[in-house]
Length: 474
Image 1 (spheres, one colour):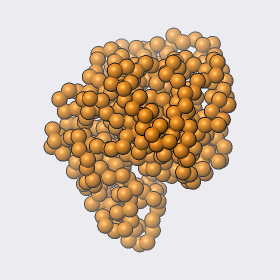
Image 2: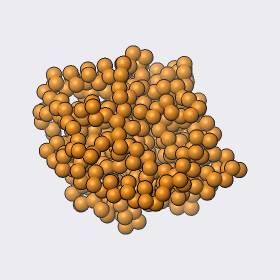
Image 3: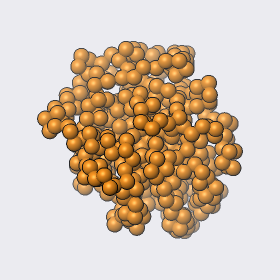
Image 4: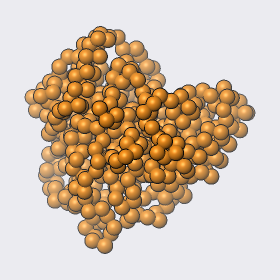
């Protein structure tokens, strides 16, 4: 690992500034990333590279800027998007061979906003089949390679696996993924990046292919909290085509534009007895060092316990129940058809949803409503709750895809709560693999969560190295 200030490892805001100040053109930046993507085919980050479209968008951005028109703060900046985000005329396979050849006839609302902001879409990134898994493993279409280990094939984190690999390897400065049970935060955590899951309803999902209508959320994988916040601010707004966006108060959207400095003081930290997955060895040691750094900086880590009945382990299990039930409604027919070329692990996960009763599903949704209320009340005097994002660094993958089960247990509670959550780099293990913490806040309180994240970001990981990519000739 080494520090790097080259273009492909710069923050999206810095690239935007260089374009805005005419130090670079969007075409030059786009060509730079397209060249790296072509040379990095061995990393398998992209499912489809839309080079011609990207160059056309970049040239349009340059013409607009030359005419004095700046369409947004990320004008001319390239990004990657998860395969589940539909783009008219481009394939959307959801990571499954059963959907090969499927071409979108519409463009998702979020992608229309991205284009309206003058941004450049480099292509679609690979994902776990049907977004159903957190290791990032996809043996049918191909698993993106975690760039932090050139010797062993390690989990890239899923389901937005290609998003994490693309940003970590300098194949895009920013990516838009989806998070239903941790699927933006997992690839961020295992690749040393920032992964932000906004509150449910913050970004419209209209035109995106679903896994769970209750739990699906779109969010950015980025290098910094500031990039993630600004990108979300540009995309967050009510949309009549996605009823979830109409349930949030207007202040949840508008407050994103007003970052506020967070003063030093107590930080709520989920008591280790309440963690839904245990940490041991190097990850636990790294967690204790993180607490020491916060204390030294004046942010006093204060143990926080949830009220009675609000079990993070149970919420993780309930999230899986709701996810599987709704996934079966979307893809059960495919899973039950033995002639469809699904990965056996994902087929079994979807099929299990067909055995969940309506009453069990309804009871889980009722618990969700109660949990959201209880969490908001318990967190009334706190900006955010700090807890681990991963119980271990990226591991090699196993056929049953169970080696990263602890990752899911730690990330899923935030989805069940409809809560904003952000994964932040928190250092490395002895093998040089990234570790991560996460912050969670009650639904609709994204601004205070991001204020807290910005304050803690430099303390959780006081240096930001990048992976050694020489094995891929990058």
